[in-house]
Image (cartoon, rainbow, N blue to C red):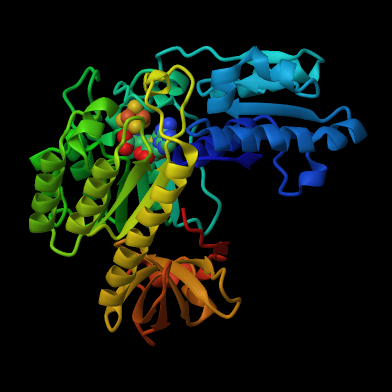
Length: 454
Ligand code: SAM
Ligand code: SF4
């Protein structure tokens, strides 16, 4: 299984593995696999191109092993449907974002020689299968809602993931409770706009109420969520930061642009002033909260003056991290039809300037942490050096540090010694006891993973 795209796609791939695992054996060796699935992302044209080029590169493998079932799922599959079969004659299966639960049946049909397409976008959310986690797994993602009703004018999500639907709170609480009982420490709740969680449920429910219920689970050390739409960030939600002990002091709050004219044409339903007020309230409710954001440059009609407003807002908000993208016209979206598209060279130049501003802000945020002792959830071996371990602070920065291997899968205290552009460096504070169930966890073999930057 190859996964492209956001955390939501990563979580979907885990779900696919679970759904298929009930019927088939899973293998970690690609050369042993009889089924090769690609989970795709359609958010920008570049992500779609990567999928097409991977499909092309799989032709020789399929020629050598004609019995291999090759399938494409996720957002590009949803968007392209039948057209993908025409593009790739060696492809056996195309399944959309709601086809995951039907995978065993679809794979079975493909195995019997049918070229299968299933891109139905029904509204109902079937209950996911009982989750399991391999021993030593300490972090997981739990999808709490699907789809989006916002129709931002640049975004393909409502077309490829359908209308917004929330999962029942009881099922979410049970899933998180089972994870914590299995030794889990950190849960990230996922949805395109988690702040509107609960709309349309038969029982009255809001996102802050869900957070409170999860925070009450003993043993849950870290709770995170993504993504938040600034319009729906309520005062009640703002006050959960700093109040709920498990809720990490980090919020990803995509602003997209700092210019009101652009925000209106993006159909974001907030202004830069609203956004600034929310940032101020967050910092008041939870001093030390780290903020990250998403930014688009070169949206149709964006002028140099609009762009400067975005740079100004970045400085004012003091983002710790930003994910920035050149605007990419997407099928079916309104902005793709706007006549005033910005030339590619202007987008590239603005992106470089914006990233230089963010690099400075990130470096400053990292420098402020040097000299502090921080709690790190140790994820595995560092990508930078095999002698180092890596993990994340509650405020989401990556730390590479030296210390014993037994720390993997545990919370540890780390003294921050150096600030780098994308990570921090530190030293384990010897003797710092893991705050979680130490003895019990040390007996399980820790899962070793490599930290990755989003
Ligand atoms: N639901 C989230 C929100 O409203 O903030 C966004 C989810 S989207 C998967 C992740 C990010 O991709 C967006 O925040 C936006 O910055 C970027 N994005 C979406 N459509 C884009 C496009 N057409 N061109 C460039 N970037 C895009
Ligand atoms: Fe896309 Fe806007 Fe929905 Fe986010 S809120 S997924 S950007 S339509």
